[in-house]
Image (tube, rainbow, N blue to C red):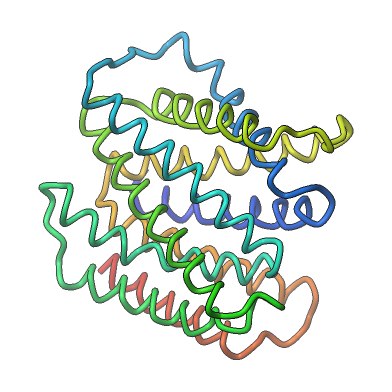
Length: 273
């Protein structure tokens, strides 16, 4: 399967996971959700671990630790945005990740970034930032935009770090299990899930399944394509959410979000040209 189809499948999985996340943030303490969700993500790949050929070196350990750092801090940013904004607004904010992915690809990988990829990432990100202001309720733009930018930068770096790991022969299960298990341990220590009811486990598991599908498809796409292109294709997530919301609720979409969605389409068309 091509990197394009895998990345678009990842975008669809992320869209569904985003809806689950917003519903859970309303019902439970947001910080206490993060650790259990990462833990369930790790558990979902346990059946594949006996077949993993493990790789150990100082470089790989450093890349894993950097990935865990991105996950831990990125998850705090995105859950903070979920508290104040809709699922669509958060997804639109996350779609700014192509620009950091382009920058980190140029800095950390030997793969060159084309002008087309850079322009596509810029179109997507500028359009998304124009839609963010005023999309997070009582959270002012002076706080929302730095959160969006930080989360996007960490997501872009995470994708490039994953590419560096796949270049060293690591597979999906090894990369995903290590970083999600360590992120789970850190967040459970920071925010123990004391107020999460056992009855919430089925909902958490459903969200974890789609989140794991997203990460797994991204990793598979990275084995076949450029981080900049993959991240730009994943930026179609808000477009899927926007039109899904329109089909279900039959309400007119905010013009700024429609504009951002159309810009995403233009950016993706450039990235895959």
